[in-house]
Structure formats: C-alpha cells, structure tokens
Image (cartoon, rainbow, N blue to C red; front, top):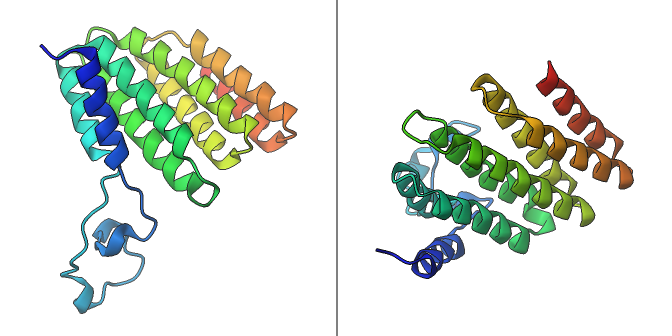
Length: 200
C-alpha cells in the first residue's frame, strides 16, 4: 500500500513536470488553429504540452478507488503549485488550465460510484475561496475571475445534484468583499451575481 508521503512525492513530480506554453511548443493542435493550417505544419515535430495530464490521470485513479484523502491532497497540492508558480504574463493561461482540471475532477466525483460528493464539494469551495483571496491580495484579477466563474459554474451543478451550497455562497461572499476592498467593482459584481444566481 502506498503511503501518503509516497503519493505526495508522485503528485509533486507530476505537478513539477506540467508545462503550459503559450505557443504550444510547435505542436499542432487542430482545435486551437485559428486559420487553415499550412501543409508544412501538419507533421509538426513538436510535443504536446503536459497541461496537468499526468496529475489528472493520477487523481482520476484515486477517485475510482474512492480515496478521499488522496483526492483532497491532490486538489490542495495543485492549487498550492498554481499559487506558487503564477506569473503576470501567464496568469490567465495558468488559471484556465488549473481550473479546467479542477472542474473535471469535480464532475467525475459527481458520478454515482463516488460516495463522497458532498465532502469533495465543500473542500473544493474552501480551497477556491482561500486561493481566490490569495490572488486578490496580490492583484491577480484575471485568475481571480476564473476562480469566481468556476465556483459559480460548479455551484450551479452542485445545486442541481442536491448538494448544499452554503459553503459556495460563503466563498463567493468572501471573494466579493475582497474584490470590493481592492476597488475591483466589476469583479465584486460578478461574485455577487454568481451568489444571487445560486439562490434562485
């Protein structure tokens, strides 16, 4: 049986090797092509970026095993890694990729074979509230917006699944107040609207 320390080492290894290049490292991703690809680009020698794929695979395995502690550890470690590595010039890309992976984890945890849906949802809300506060304090407003939007989107899904939304409401309220303190009225309004939409 793998210890928590061994799992943590594997988890951190996957997070450390994750890459988020803006130019896709020369790899041709047809879904991302804005114009028709030139024939010489079709057999590009580039390697696709990791974008947390290894991390995702590891966490999905733990979800299938219903290993709540390791799933929570994974969520926490990914957000810590994100907060520790965020940079101004890649703020949106990093936030988008990180939150995309969190939303996939959340959706997988909502399937009927996973018995700890409420625990994961409440944990996610708490983590995102604190990560959003950290980002707002450091004036990463694009990343903060991504967190608010993700909380709102997952909150709507949670409500439809009958999960409690009190923690979601509280998290959005904290982010709303923090955005207002930073004089980010539009961001505060986004959080307030998201909170209101959960109530209706």
